[in-house]
Length: 242
Image (cartoon, rainbow, N blue to C red; front, side):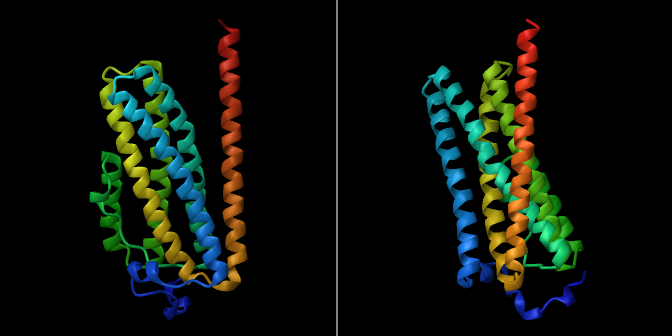
């Protein structure tokens, strides 16, 4: 599907223009509702993690481990709908050819080595992918992979802390903080991308896109429940084998 198939005037001059642009009420309500859900989930996770880090710095190590354990579950409340939204953007764009502006990722906005590497690669590919379509799809794919990887990294780091398996716990705490920073960057990048997408989304495609978001979110919840059942099964098997 080529960019020329789109209406040239549908896309703004830049991402900055898109961010300040007006949306019709129905689009604005959908964008705002999803943005607020992601922001609320992020805030709950961030507050919980800040408390855990503060307790650790104060030397209350037992309480800090309990708090960071809670933050691991709250992290999933952010990463799962965020990944679902990114997949929905990709699926709709591939099917309908609805392609917004997409600025390359900036390595300076990431703290961890993985985030910086992915952002650098994104910038390099952005120079050779002249099609707006491929630039957008590559950025969505990169962000989706980063969100899932960072979520897993956060969970694994918390597990290492809880199990006392880290040779140097301070390094793990630094990784936890770095992962939080980079997931926040991924959230902000996704929200900006989402707004640009809503700018070019034709009104008659809103219902289809809303359904795609719902389907991807439901798929994410189904996968999460399957993981939880598997985890419970493994725990019960381990207990029975004691």
